[in-house]
Length: 314
Image (tube, rainbow, N blue to C red):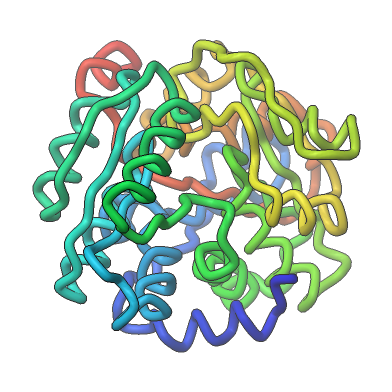
């Protein structure tokens, strides 16, 4: 089970190796929503996504025990984070991406020094292929969310939120496989049990919400969403264990909600998110009554948006 000490140790290790991203009040959006809203800007992080945190923490545990290198499956952001972390430790890296992954993210993975393979129509199929390659070629597989070291690294965001806004009432985080929100839950709930933590998923991929409903990890059918970063059909077992214990609620948002949230962040806050990075604001906008008058922090998890999509949203 992931512990607060694990998160604190990860924070000590990655300090100075990642950007301590700002938590800034979005005054115009706060006025619209009727709350005090702050943005945790992980789109300003190394690789422009929170994934750098978990991957740096993971690689420190793998030094000296990677026979050939590391391999993973990713829609883009985790692959960039692993490629960067592996390059810093001079470890070869390979990333399997699905056909739906944005070209912008593929190019970034290669630029960080990893080999890239395109396989399958979604993350699930890419993941299966990466596991097969790992076994056949004896590479070390690094899961994008179902891994305690990854979860601990992502949880450092929660520690920073509490340092910057000790009186925060509600924290919203996106959910794909659950690695980010589970790390946040341990960091926040073990430090301030009264903080409400809300996960936000798309209606196209409600895998964690459905798992919570059924009381076990379950898969959902492949859907269609612009938020590729949270397009996960089956969440992680380890994250599910944490989320089942601590989560206050999971909110679902539709595609128009995500587009409106992207537009609001771009025009009202001058922040450019990727769609997965805007799902938290989408949740806040659709459940406005539940956060009225409160101090709210939302995680803008990434900014690796495809240029074509961005042009259509402005």
